[in-house]
Amino acid sequence: MFRQARWNERLIFELGWPGRRGYVVPKVEKEILEAVGGLKTLLPQELQRRTPPQLPELSEAEVVRHYIRLSEMNYGVDSGFYPLGSCTMKYNPKVDEVIAKSPHITMTHPYQDERTVQGTLEILYLLANWLAEITGTFEVSLQPAAGAHGEFLGTLIMRAFHKSNDELEKRTELIVPDSAHGTNPASGAMGGFKVLVVPSDEEGCVDLDALESAVSERTAGLMLTNPNTLGIFEKNIERISEIVHKAGGLLYYDGANLNAILGKARPGDMGFDIVHMNIHKTFGTPHGGGGPGSGPIGVSKSLERFLPIPRILFDGHRYHLDYDKPHSVGKIRSFYGNTGVLLRAFTYILSLGAEGLEAAAEVSVLNANYVMKKLMKIRGLDLPYALERPRKHECVISCKRLQRETGIRALDVSKRILDYGMHSPTTYFPLIVDEALMIEPTESFEKKELDRFVNIVQNISSEAYSTPDVVLKAPQNTAITRLDEAKASHPRTMALSWIMYQKRNL
Ligand SMILES: *Cc1c(COP(=O)(O)O)cnc(C)c1O
Image (cartoon, rainbow, N blue to C red; front, side):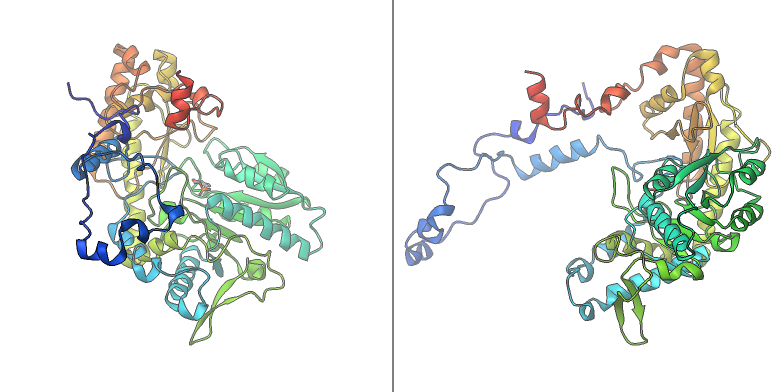
């Protein structure tokens, strides 16, 4: 019987046949051999092997088929729908890859004299300006390597700002809503702040009364995601900005997901002082599995002097790296940041144009609301918070009722989705929603694909009420069946290589 690739496929070393070759080196001509006095004299003694290397022996076609089969264990945004809420898995146009792979760029070295990398500097300079325009900030630094890194830099800038006012001693608290991404409180703590959590109101937005009582002369700032992780726009943002600024704090915008507001609204105009954006989410870069990413930050005019060094300046003729910034928080990353990712963003923005970015925002919001309306009608599923308000780039659905009525949890639904050949949504985030499924369709999937997803969830709901065992045992049709979630994240129980696995099973 046919079976798709599984994790324990045979290794390439276990395949093949002695004497089989993928590539045949041309024979050295006799005259050449005679002229140099034999092959052995060509190679220094110490580099000559006594035994041949233990290489697998396969034909080229066998090697290709082996790796293609292994690659089919994977699922990517190019395989189909990938509704990972908050992580923005969108289709990455191949033209971005063509540009990022251009030898004009890949064959340069970061240690080269800046006069010889003027093209790269120009691209980065323009990109920083575009991102400042998109976010409504005064100046952007492209250096942070990820969203969390941008947040950390943001806390350093907050510190530098309060220090310059002689207030760092007393401004020790960073406020974060309870719907925030986990990196927000973590970055606050890394930046040396005490993190205060403010609750959400019944609308899923920041509770203004709670915020009023949380701010004080100890407030360093507020970190906010807008639209928040429920996909809801904080309609009181102007009031929030007023409360925080009046207390002497700074307003930090977690712009990991800019998809909903591209060309529509700008954090700078909402009153934010510091903004990070996740290039690898909004601006088309293949991500997942830990990188690479890029999390530039933009700041208002009054914070510009604290940005990290070096900055790229243009004098009308040449671009150059400027280190002369006495108030800068210093250097936070080597060279210019993750240039490959930034180049993709440059191409992405250039190819879409202002109108294209705006259209992307519109379609992503439309898709999220379409999926939300369909899902909330499915038996066992509910839409928590603000029933009548539209969502932005994503929506969060609760499986609490399904769990109560059938014992099937959000995790089981997610695992079962894999059996239907589709990627699951983000599960159990944000923490304020019980049994949460967080769905972000992005602008890059058509209605047919959205309908397919809704139908799959509909099927799983029916299964939960009729044959729950099928859902509990899922996934069965994938390369790896259900993991022990606790064991799978424990380093001592993991076999991280084939050799470790074999030793474990001896
Ligand atoms: C992804 C994300 C982050 C963190 O970004 P990384 O690049 O993964 O460090 C922060 N906030 C929100 C809302 C996010 O979705």
